Amino acid sequence: MMKSILYTALASTLLWSVASHAGELFQLQSPAFADNGLMDKKFAGNNSQNANCTGENVSPALVWSNLPAQTQSLALVVHDPEGAKGLGVTHLVAYNIAPSAAGFAENALRDGKGFTGGKNTPGTDRWYGPCPPPGSGAHHYTFTLIATDLPPSLPAGLTREQLFDKLKGHALAATGLIGRFGQ
Image (tube, rainbow, N blue to C red; front, side):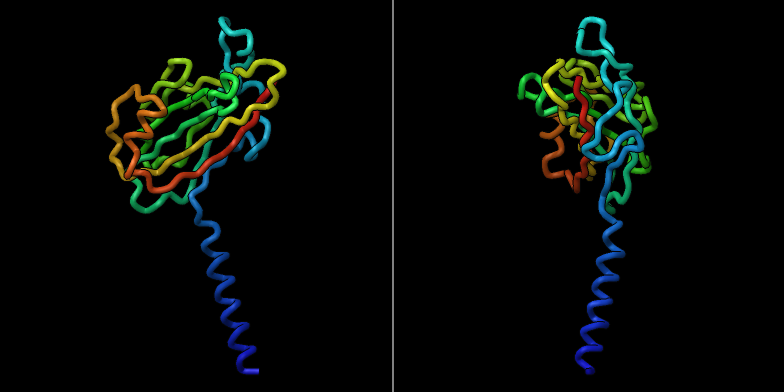
């Protein structure tokens, strides 16, 4: 009987510990779409030179929580692995994001607010919304938020690959969110 009570108390303590720490995961979310959910057409790119860019180029709001304790800056990359017929398209490279920030309001990424812009595949330093060709299915737009131990001092204009090179040995943790979009 005493062993049973001891095991029950131990199990309760472990369950409480797991439950209380479960909410402490580094997380990225959007009020605009669920993880792996469809994004509205307004988030798609808007470019008169590209017939596939028929949206409003609105950047979605994002929120994050539970940064690692040593975080000095954040980086955010949005990449479509199915884009360019499987070669991938990077829609956003943003970094030098202050750890005191809790997210981005709608259109902050489009308007260049709260980050240093890198160079995405279309050659801009801000949000460039999805422009998948009709009939290619719903592409997966992977939003990856990286906590780093670097002070916010990286130079503007880094490509995704250049940013990743700078973050080697300095990434503390990462979290992600997938939004799907197709025409």
